[in-house]
Length: 148
Image 1 (cartoon, rainbow, N blue to C red):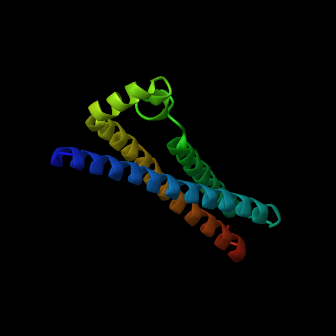
Image 2: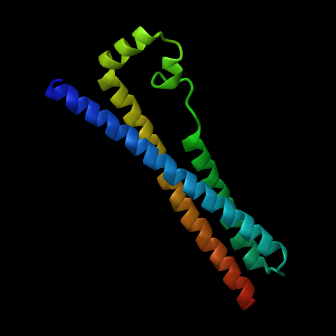
Image 3: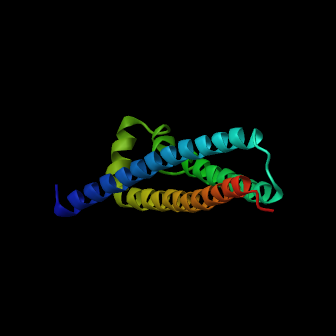
């Protein structure tokens, strides 16, 4: 195997590993956001909230739902993509070998773009989760303090 081929195989494995890491982080954050939404809804349902708490809490919940939407979008399978399972499902064993050896660089490009898209969604979801969580904390403080 030439040095170029080894480098391509290494880059391909690295990109695939990054996608796995991003998907793992996404799954954990989605579980966390779901738990926060359920917990906030349960707590808020039993408390007498003032107007400020309603507004801050409502905005926080909206941001958390938006974060969950981004997380779901980043994990949504792309069955129309030209790389991976959908392509391989249409090929014979001989065609798969030829496609993989011929198109490794193209596969790296496609997977890299997929990884960047997933990472961008994850980063935005983290930002929304932080903002939504901050608003929920503000709502709790407004409820406890009786402001507004």
